[in-house]
Amino acid sequence: MAEQPWHEARLIPTSGINGAEEQERRATSALLAVMAAVREFGRAVVKPLGAPAGTLESYIEVPFELGDKRLYPDGLIRVSRGAKSWTALVEVKTGSNELATEQLENYLDIAREQGFDAVVTISNEIPPMAGQHPTKVDKRKLRKVALHHLAWSEVLAEAVMQKEFRGVADPDQAWILGELIRYLEHSRSGALEFDDMGDSWTSVRDAVSTATLRPTDKGIATVVARFDALLRFASLGLGRRLGTEVVPVLSRKELNEPALRAQALTQQLCSSGQLTGAIRIPDTVGHLVVTADLRSGQVTCHVDLDAPREGRPTTRVNWLVRQLKNAPEAARVECFTAHSRGSSAAELLRTVRENPAALVTDPSREIRSFRVATSAPLGTKRGRGRGTFIDSVLASVDSFYADVLGDLKAWSAAPPKLRPTSPDAVEGLEHTMPASLVSTDYSSQDGPTQPDVGEASPQVSTTTDDPPRVEVDGEPADARALDHTTEQHPTWGVRAAKVTVESK
Image (cartoon, rainbow, N blue to C red):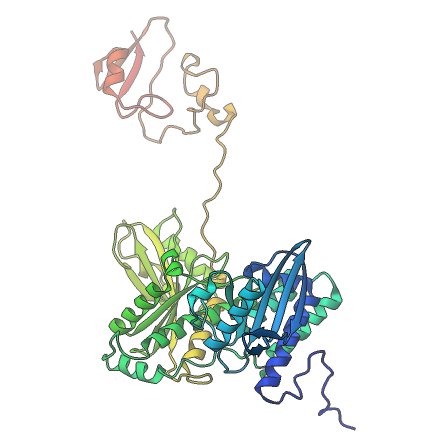
């Protein structure tokens, strides 16, 4: 009998899922059960939500009374440590289903009445920045109960990082966590990836191409928020593969006031037709900056890095080129010099490899930093697949890190060397100077410098006991005058003057 149609038994099967309700129930039960079974994973999920370290218990479809209504939240999590406990209600959505405001406000009321600490939502909705919730609720209901949101992409990234990079102590628990990862990565689980730029994408895109977009146009806020959500999704995916925390770069003001970030992106989209954001990857030379230009149809990724602080200009350029061995020839390299606005020169990498001096427009100006950038065609479709905006941005981020950013290392100065501490450094001087003029002890001011060839050196005659007579340029001079009419030599003490020492 052929074994091709046989399905391998899995701890959390994807077969038999019929409808969104069954999908949500199975995803909720699988996630909460694994959180309770795998201590490290459960702790990693609930710690950022404010839960203490302790024993985690999980339940599904717990009934509660609210007025004359009987409600069933999808799940409940309780973390206990001694007499202290932390409890949260859980609401889960899968597929394209979105969270409902009324439902969340009811759960917030239940949590307040029961003395619970939080309400946690899980769905495929990705807010523009971490800490935000995709659903607006009455803020008065958040005075005593916290409202947290986790995207399924975030849950999957946390599971992969815990199993593959941080580690799980018990092998059986590690296998259980791997089964959850297999389930969430399956298309039928309902834990979807970021796959849509929103209903307003087409109208905003067309208005940008014709330069008629205005900040007050309907739908622009949705597109701007979706772009930031796309950057978060790209960060989660990259971090999942790298095994580290990759996050979008936001200023402190933008974190405190998310409207500032949305306003800046809106103005940029209307004025230049561009959407820009940056991603922070630990231990890299700089931020990965992504610029999607809807007018030119190009997506560009670039990184700025400091140049070495020593060496000639071409030496500094070669230092960069040697690290770009895997970068495509079409990558653009820009050079920034001291006390100048903007880049002083820009060339394709293929040109710089052949002629590093192509980036040096003025050898007297110090090169302070470089910028390396790659560009690719930008898709225009709103969904996923070939020719889509989302896939073109994700592909550019991944390829730029693999080909450019992952190979770059910051410059560091060579450690200083010790000065010689032995009289050997001035060996030989006693053969060219009288014993009375040679120091008997080595000094830090002594050096190995020998007199230059052709340089005037003192002529000393010791055939008589008479005091020497010193002439400077043919004229007699005493020792005091000699100090003021000659230039100091680092080794001999007298230089740049014709000095003759002879006996009377």
